[in-house]
Image 1 (cartoon, rainbow, N blue to C red):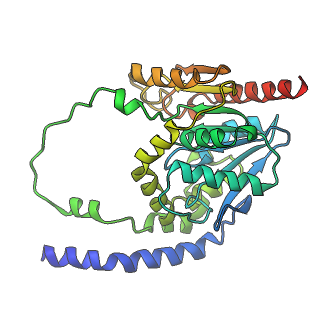
Image 2 (cartoon, one colour):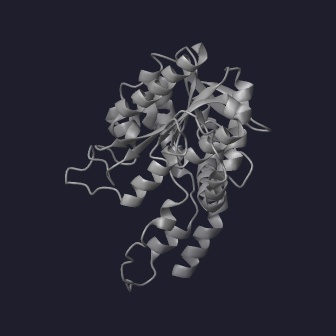
Image 3 (tube, rainbow, N blue to C red):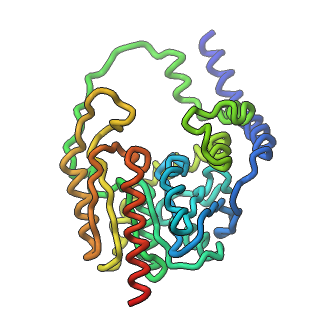
Length: 331
């Protein structure tokens, strides 16, 4: 009986996924992209800009995340310059892009996005976590188009290699059950469909007063194409790390590296949270030192999402690079 149930479930997956995609496509029409859809080489990427001034700041989120976590930073930065957020290929409102989703591919698409956007360079790239790889690659390929980098707790290609291996828990003996079977089932898209159906009624309290574009970005959630993009980004990490390691930044590029000092967010964890490892701090310090105009900023009250825990640090770092860019243009 269990075998028949499992076989029926597996056979129905393509049908359910197809129906979810169709239904989600219809519902998504209720939440149009707030920005522009811009050609990035055979597919379109969603770009949303606020504020005025130059240099424009482009935010590059981490793997599996979006620009909602950047709302506090985005709002403040828009008071003194233009700030843009975008959805990588397959994320949010953007079309799917070519696979594999390496950081080199993402940087190439970012180049076309900015070129076709009509926004004049040079730009400041503010990137979080995995997004730092594509930001570094873009800067290495287009040094004249980059006024500076602000890397927020960036992933680093050497951190895993230099860190001691984690302690593995002993094996737990238990029978294979339905929960294990469900782990093997690819995403069906039903959560995305439910989120679209319920709309803004499911917004968490912290998003109740944010601008409509941020609310809609939450509502459209993570469609199946985003899951596919995320999985490809994850599977391509070794290649992305190798690409980033070969990306040499200009020796004097304005560079700010914000390093989280806590393993978890003190904002959301009541108990004392442990500090990050020495390796985590050192590899990011080394990255900051790769430019004579680089500086590491330690975020002592932050977990990995510094833009949520201490957004003022990120805003100050961006403003510092913006002001330096203005000084460089007048000299």
